[in-house]
Image 1 (cartoon, rainbow, N blue to C red):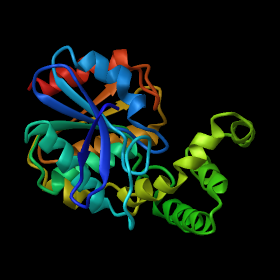
Image 2: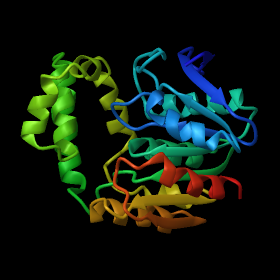
Image 3: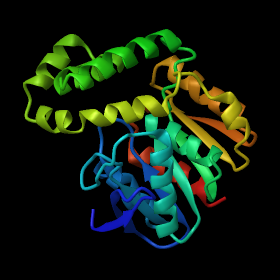
Image 4: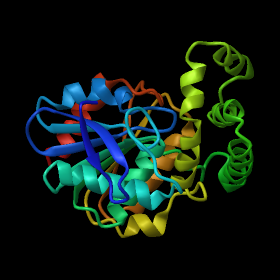
Length: 259
């Protein structure tokens, strides 16, 4: 990231802007920085001015406690301001839940696209999310960052042996470094269910995407998001899973953001 702006509470946000055209802000999900969206940004920058950023507490961005969903919405407001005062938003996974909340909060947003926001209406439901939240809060409160990361990986369905291998890998230290931000992603997911009342207030076009090779509950959640938004559209990217390929995603986003 080579630029910086300040959020409303003074938190420095690291971001990178590439390309020319209407502004688009890309928002990553849990346990990731803006760098994970660089390949997608490169493809979209042929037609748009694309901003990727490190969400607070990650990468080159700072953090100012206490964390709250409203602070991350203010972060997006600062980035939209840096983009010229209006932008379209794209968010993947829990980043999708964040951009939907930003649109519902009245930010100057043209269009919103999300990929597989993990609302659990058709998966584990609110009970599993509540148990995860309790355990995550306890682990982070006791400084057990590694255990917090493991809780998240379990929530995603990663097999125990793969988690054990991850703990022994060189990447584990970097994962522990941003483990406190798991609380931010958990907060933005709310009770874990599709926020239908909030989505009904979003007046801009919303595109909810899912992968054809992803679990059915993620596809149904994306479809529910589109159905709850007043101007929602649902689309499946055949052959894709939660780790969506930029080459499959970019043309669909470009068509949508071009209006």
